[in-house]
Length: 544
Image 1: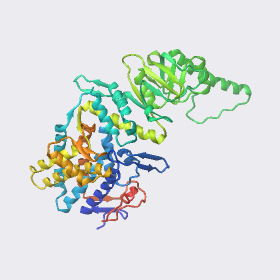
Image 2 (image 1 turned 90 degrees about the horizontal axis):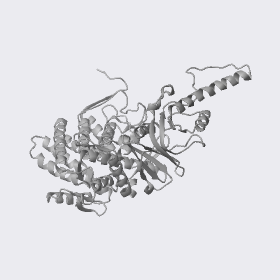
Image 3 (image 1 turned 120 degrees about the vertical axis):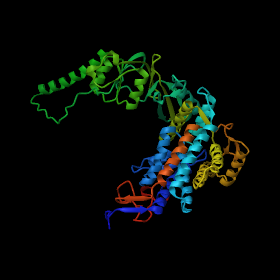
Image 4 (image 1 turned 60 degrees about the vertical axis):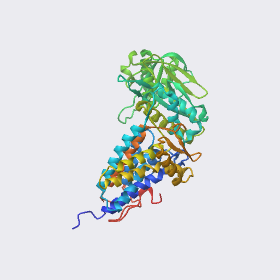
């Protein structure tokens, strides 16, 4: 009996598991070479020809044209890791791929997927407990340790060249947006921190500024550009002649009628400008457009106006100035205004807006780079480091990096496996083996022998050296914590949780039924799995 449509495809049982595992592993292997200080970059060219050069795991996976449902589930691992921890995306995806590789070996030994899944769940829970046991406490004001966390996050990225300067800026920035909660914990509110970029200068000239930086010009040359204490209006309405919602035609029979029409438009603009003047505003940041005639009238009134201000800048200025965002000039009054000091840097063509008073706060990290590609990658590295430092301040726990935590966890999981009964014991041991992928890949990417490195690391940890990690620059095993390679415990816990859950999700599937080919794009890309057969990687191609 035929119950599926003519174009439908179905992959069952071991074929389905093999298909899914192969797709997930292809994604993991795509980013493995970017891991660590010696990791390589990827050049990604989108359909419009735009080029992105990066070694940031989540950026690579987002930019890749992935057209496979299983592969997209692994991409979600990276996105979740980025949202929750800010860093460790490559680690999470690589571990997920290695878990599935080891799981495939167990499946070939006729171990049921549910036993593997139970074993992975036990191992992941135990690993997170051990992370908490191994982690060391860090105080929110321990700047030296927090700088090491930031430097570790940036190592291997383009921001590494100036990591000492940038780490200092990052720690100071997080410090200024961190507050102590009523229960004694610390919260870093990155909503009060803005990142602005500028090309044409060296990254070593990046700086941390109090307040906001607006990369815009005044709309009129005769406007004042600096104020000690200005009343600021944030406007989300165009200062232009209002257009009708429907198409209209106006019949003009004489020049007088045309002049009356123009006079009416001018009167509308004058009224809008007068509403701004009556509110008491000295400075207007407008998210929409400002008519040329309105610009002239605002300049005559001595009001500074900036148009087409980004929505994100308007929201940040709200925090800085304490102003409300006004969407209707008819209802504006003095209570909607904020207060700030404003100055213009003509060399950089930037406005610096600094809040006045104790209730307003916010800082801007101004990143500079030689080209757009450089500054984009610099911003990605700094954003990850900011998230990691903020998470460390909030969480208060750190770990030794360089593969130290993974080797120690693997050792403890193997000891734990002895207490696990049934076939789940094999899955726990497979989980431990998967964690050791991290030091192996660190060694491979540094051109070192991965087997020798892993043997040396295991020996050091068996001797009780919990912090022993790989120095990829010398190839030696040493105390990673003392060497300044420090990671946040929260990111490691999240990576383990995300990787194990994604692997279990893939292993749970034993039947794939697709209305067309096995791709998510709905087109006729190569790689659809023939009925009962194996599919390719869809839009990722088969040549990963």
